[in-house]
Length: 297
Image 1 (cartoon, rainbow, N blue to C red):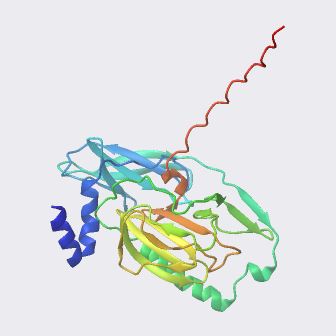
Image 2: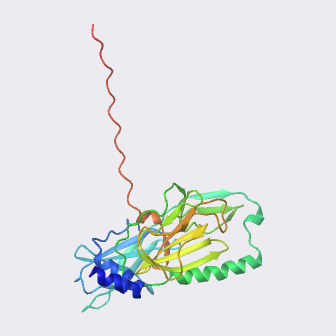
Image 3: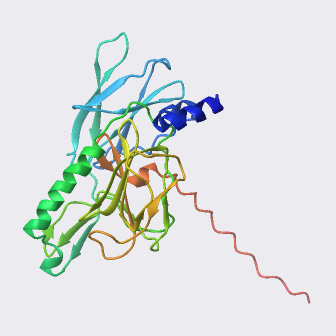
C-alpha cells in the first residue's frame, strides 16, 4: 500500500494529501471557548462512513471522526456579538436539526499609541492596493476542501515568545483600529517557519500590509496564514507535510521589525491560535525548604 501511494503521489501529489487523514492515529480538538475569536465544539453520534453535514449560517463547519462518533468544530469571528446562536446538523436518514449555543463576551487588551499620522493613514493609491489584495487573500481563506485534518492540535510554527496576542486592539492617536487577527511570534530574521499540519498551499503573494505571505489549506475550512516572511520557499498548489519549511521570518510589509504574524482560520473566521497549541505543562510546585543543618556539640 505504501509503495502504491508513493507512485500515485508522483502522478498527483494532492491525492496523497487527501488520503493522509485516513491514517491518523487520533483527532485532538482545540480548547473550546464560546467567545468572539474562539471555538465551539459539538459531539455528534453516527457511524464512521456517514459524516454529518453541519452549517453555521451559510458556511459549512469542520466535522471530523473522534472517539466512536463525530465532532464539529466551529470558529467564531471576532465580530461575533454575544448572544444565542445555533448550528444546523444534517445526518443520514434524519431531518435537519438545530443545536443551540451561547456566545459570551470577552474583553481583549487595548493598546493606546501616539504616532505620526503618516504612519497610520494610507494614501489613496495604497488604500486601493490594500483593498484589492485583501479580497484576493479573503477568497483563499474561505475555501473548503472535503477531507478533515488528522488533528487540530498544532505545533507553533517558529520558536519564540508571543510578542502580540490575538484580539489586541490598537488605538492610534485616539482612533480605534481592527483587532489583531493573529498571533505575533518574536523570532530572529531568517528563522525557518515550519508547517504545523499537512496541507496544500493556496495563496502566495507579496502584499502591502502582509509582506511576503503564504496561506495553507489543511482541509474542511481550516487554513493557516503566515505573514511578513523574508523568503518564501513554497509554490502555489504545492502539497506540504508537517515540519516542512515554507519560508523564513522577516520584516516585509507594514511592520517595524522581524517577527511571524500567524493566523488560524476556521470556516472563514480568524480564531485564536493559542487554542490550537498544546496546553502548557503544569507548573511544578516549589521544592520544600531544606531545614538548616544542625551542628553537633
